[in-house]
Length: 496
Ligand code: GDG
Image (cartoon, rainbow, N blue to C red; front, side, top):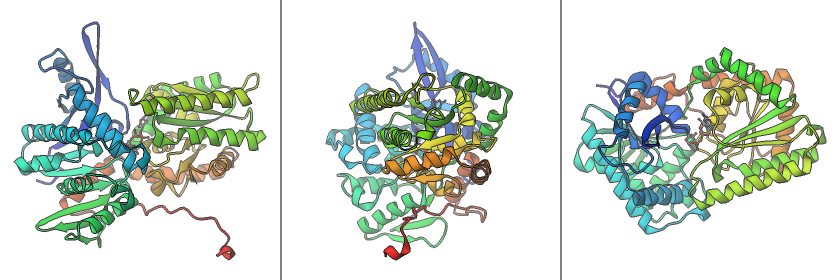
C-alpha cells in the first residue's frame, strides 16, 4: 500500500480543538494556529486519526470524552487524546519545547533556558506519545509527526515496533554554529534520523540540517543529487527535503468573494473610514518582530508626513503562551509602543495604530485581508508564515501589496511579488511601507497575480500529496521546490 492511500495518523502536540468547561458543561471548538489551519482540511478530506494533547489537565472517563466523540463525527476523522499532568506540561511544553527548542531554532540563543529537568520531561512526554502511536496504529498506517515538540516519537516507537514514519518541522532549522550549542544536540540529531522522511519548510533549513549531519555524524553519507536528499547511516536510509507548507487557497479565495465577507468588508470600510489599511496579524511572539514593525511604522510617519491621515496600522495580536513571563513583557512593550505612536501622531479624526489583542473570526479576518492595502510581515525568523499566504489568497481584487520579512520561510516562494525587507532595518522597512502604500495599481496587480499563481498551485493539498509521495521515493516531475532566497546587497559594483 502506498502512503498516499494509507490511513494517515497525524501526531502533534495539540489536538486541533479547544475543550472548555462552563458551569459543568463541556464544549468544543476548532483550535487556532498554523498547524490546525494547515492540516485540518486535509484530514477532513481524506479521513484518518489525529493524536494529541487536548490542551488542559483531564481525567479519564469524564463527560469531555463524549464531547470529543461528537467532535470526531463533525470533523470526519478520529481524535485520540494524550493526557498530560500539569507538571509534564510545564517541563515539556513551556520548558523544553518553548524555552529551549523554539528560541534556539529561531537563532535566539540568549532566550534559551537549558535546565536539564526540562529535557527529561521532554523525553517522558515524547515516550507517552510514542506509546499512543503504537497502541492506536497498525503497520499499514503512515504516521506523520508534526513539529519540534515531538522529535523523539519515532525513536520510541521503533523501540517497540516498525512503522512507516515521517516528521515535518514547521519552524526553521538553525545553522550548525547555533545548533551545536544545544547540550542534547547528539540525541536530537539521532532522534530526527529515526524517521523515514524529514521535511523542512525551505531549502535553507534543509541545508542547515544536512550541514549538521555532515559535521557531527562523520559516518553518514549524503546523496543530494535529487530533489529529495538521502542520508545513509549504516543500513538505514533517511530521506530529507523541503516542502513549503501551503494554505487552502480555494477556501480563502471563495470565502473572500462570498456575499457574507463582501458585506463585512464594506462594513469595516464604513467603520474605519477612507484611510488605507496596513494590516498585521500575529500570535504574540518575539519571533514575529512586533516591536520592530511598530518602530518601522513610527519611522515612516516621521520621515514621510504624506502618510499621516492616509494610513492606519491595523494590528491583530492573538494571545499566546500567556503564562510565560517573556510573553507578558513582550505584550507590555507592544502596548507601550502603540501608546507612544498614537500619542505622538494622532489628530482629531485619525488614530494611526488600531491595536486589537484578541483573535478574530475567520470571516472577519478574510474581510480584513481583502480590504487591506498592505500586509506587513516582519518576522525576525519564521518557519513559513501563513498570514502572508492567506493575505494573498484573499486579495481577490489584486489591489494589495505584501511587505515580507526576508527571514520568513515564505520569502523563498513569494520573492517574485513581495517587497522583501530586513526586519532589523527600521528605515528600510519604513521605505518599503511608503513604496507599498503609493505603488501604482498596475504594479500592485502584477505582483499580486504572480504570488497568487504560485500559492494556487502549491496549496495545502499539494503539500500533503508531495510529502507523501516523497516517502515512497518517487517525486513526480511537476514538483518544484522554491530556490533558496538570498537578499541582494544593493551595493554599487564599483564599491568592490
Ligand atoms: C507555525 C510556524 C509556520 C492569526 N490570527 C488569527 C488567526 N490566525 C491564524 C492565521 C494563521 C495562523 O494563525 C498563524 O500562522 P503562522 O504561520 O503565521 O504562525 P505560527 O502560529 O507561528 O505557526 C510558522 C506555521 O507553523 C505552519 O507551518 O508558517 O512559521 O511558526 O493561519 O490565520 N486565525 C483567526 N483569527 C485570528 O485573529 N481565526
